Length: 419
Image (cartoon, rainbow, N blue to C red):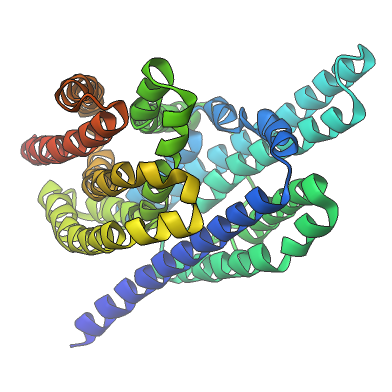
């Protein structure tokens, strides 16, 4: 009975973490709608032209945050606490030095551009703020990976709820100061996020770089980062097809489908952030691949039911909601309804993907991700030909591809279990 109560308490901590993540996502979505209503598109586009490189800066971290995300719980599970902490010291030292170096480089570049009259004062300020957001993301990625236990996820829950409140409280900044209020808004929220992560981080140790540990973290972390990155790119294929073979109107009509899909996928995103360290810790503890397989299947069973329920609800609501809120996008309703099911199937794939990462079966991803890309392109051609409708064709292709890939992931995870 005591063991059951302990398990319930652990799952409860995970549930609260996921819910707080969804609340934070919802708060962010509300802000997005407000920004579109208050800020001139030209000014917003100018700011976003500086922030577009943020995702690419993550490449410079070389997968070290992802490496410690996997290795820390694994070695803790093996009760090799010294090994785990040594790797954490190296990861922390690398991230801190990288961020300092990037700030120095960014400052030099900004000064050179301004001196050469290649950028004005406002552009200079936007460049520095955008760079700061990119560096905050690297720190958040690393610090977030150090929260492993149910107690630590309870802290993360409180942090996410605090950030959700901050999202709402700082909205007047945007109204009063327009685009610069929005720039300050993003800077403050991301800065506070990093500060809270540092204050409540579970391991307050002095970082120290070790070459051997760095190489180990790179070997583990870079494949995880690389295949995750390629996986994200593969999901952008439908939009890319519309850009190349369609028109700006079709790309615009696809926006509700893409945005709703991304919002729905917040559920598996936060679930996997909780599940991955737990799964990896257990694997480090007993080395039993069967347990990882069973955990993934059990999670998928409940996640699929939840996602399917959410998906069906959205399919019912979208024909009423889109014409009411975004009447100009009503021609994209069917695409949005179909893309909901792409998200349902993809959510299952993310759990299987995380399980393979726990087992360090990175070699399988070159087949899985390549298959997704190829099947998405083939399905797009087939369904566009059948329906003679580019928007409908790419939407169906995305849903069918993720469904096929769901079974493909299952087969490879089963194979990994036997290896």
